[in-house]
Image (cartoon, rainbow, N blue to C red):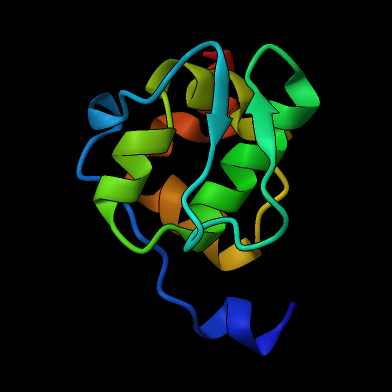
Length: 106
């Protein structure tokens, strides 16, 4: 793990229910979240969706960023497929134990 990932403070929402981002269509992220070449994420494509969610969770600067780009239903469905830095993963699962794989299977 990088020192950056270990030291970074990750933005978290108060509740998963406040994540009301698009559930379909195409999304172009803000520059402060995705500073590479402009890319449109197709939410119907699982690879695009996972990449976008990983970037938003890693780089969001506020809960407002999370609310704008993440959808609670999609996050719950794809949580176990996301490749996140361990501190980000732990922070989200600590705040939202329902995301843990055992909770999702119950």
